[in-house]
Amino acid sequence: MIRVEHLSKRYREIVAVDDLSFTVDEGEILGFLGPNGAGKSTTMRIITGYMPPSAGRVEVAGFDVFEHPLEFKRRLGYLPEHPPLYPDLTVREHLGFVADLKGVPRRKRRTEIDRVAELTRIGDVLKRRIGNLSKGYRQRVGLGQALLASPPVLVLDEPTVGLDPSQIMEIRELIKSLGGEHTILLSTHILAEVAMICRKVLIINQGRAVAFDDLETLAENHEESGRSLTLEEIFLKLTAA
Amino acid sequence: MKRTLAIARKEIIAYFTTPIAYVVFAAITVLGSWFFLSLLGQFQRHSFELTRMGRDDMLAHMNLTDQVMVPLVMNLALVLMMSVPFLSMRLLSEEKRQGTMELLLTTPVRPLEIVAGKYIAALAILTTALALTLSYPLLLSAFGSGDQGAVEWPTVLCGYLGLFLLGASAMAVGMFISSLTSSQIVAAFLTLMLLLLTWVVGWKAVDVEGAAREVLLYLSSTQHLISFANGMVELKDVVYYVSYMVLGLFLTHRALEGLRWAA
Ligand SMILES: Nc1ncnc2c1ncn2[C@@H]1O[C@H](COP(=O)(O)OP(=O)(O)OP(=O)(O)O)[C@@H](O)[C@H]1O
Ligand SMILES: [Mg+2]
Image 1: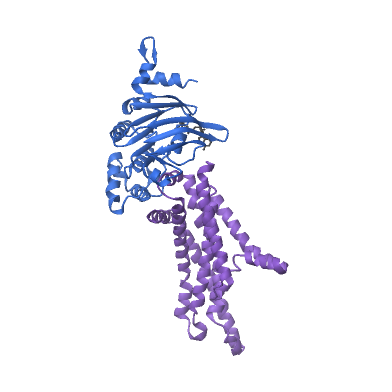
Image 2: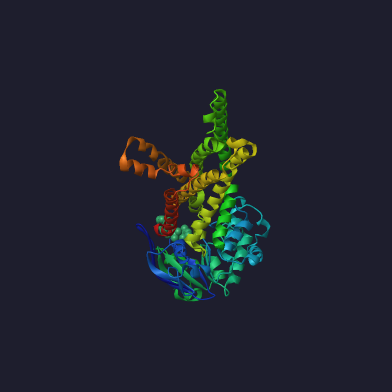
């Protein structure tokens, strides 16, 4: 569903992403890990068509961003690192606007908004102005907007940041349940989250892939003194350089 | 089209919640009324003196359209030029500042639809502001009497068409400037400076002669309003405003496309 080939991105002198290649199969949830500044958000911005890469190409459901930008974007739901929301609008107005942008038919708009509001538990703030919401609620509205129109591919940049413990559990369950139906690329710093939601991970360091494997295979390949390392130990080892 | 209208609607909501639209409406009404009342006062004094001196021949040339509405249109142009930068400043700079450009550029919307939606919203506010000032000729036609008091509506509406074109071209330029910066203040200031420049460039015309004079007058934005204000639609004036409009819209579109490459 997502195919990334030899992707590179330079910001003037900084190389943020360096010759990165990977694929995410249909229905799969890929955990995307890496230390701060590794290039996760940059990769996601390129995959969603927000930024062009310096080199390489990205395909979503067989569509290239440059050749078919609209077909490509129609299949994508994106939760950026900082949820892009209009502070002056109410949650319902905002979601209605995004639904229009995504081409949700007028008569289905209301039910679609109520559906994602139910999923992300924002039903009780639909009438509130976004500027007055707490960070956790904004994060949830951001996730809700990514889910509008049920795009087959979801790109979620640290979706559980800023949520309270019970919300973290709920949103994790939600994301897990979305797998299968949706193809998901999920970045996070919480390794336990990856172990809980994903079967496969991609770990990058300084823009380069250092691991791209099933969690089980990864554990088998990293053994020390007869015991397989935890994901945390593997992460620290691979990103130490 | 649906997406264009959705963007336009969102933009109009923002105009009223910010609440820049109300501020601009109020400013235009206050300044417009001041100009209107002083022109009307002048007209009264003038007619009164001519009557007292018994100059019926000159009195016959006095009428509300030429002595009040034509200069009022020119005065309103000034108010409009001062207001447009504040209506155009947030159009794109605010999307950049609050990061919502990331939303617009990753949903299936064409840059052209973004530009069109925002421009339509801005023009809707501009049109409303102009419509408010139509109360002056309406007042005149309600209370004026006789030949002198009659308002020549074709002339007045022609003047308003000119004002709309002037405002629309200024708005397109302002929108482009707003796409260059994430600061609304910078966008407003630069737009205001640019509009003032296109205004005052005509003043220099008195010092020069020949082709240079023609060029300076052609560049002056208010020079092109004079014919409109006097009830004449001339092709060269329409071309002038429309070319500014097209240029502004085209550059905004380019800037939106280019934004992603520059990031
Ligand atoms: N707009 C930008 N201009 C210049 N450099 C940038 C820009 N955005 C990101 N970078 C740089 O690119 C590198 C990768 O940043 P990125 O945000 O992709 O990292 P990340 O893996 O998402 O980090 P984090 O875990 O902290 O979110 C960093 O060195 C960052 O400073
Ligand atoms: Mg990041």
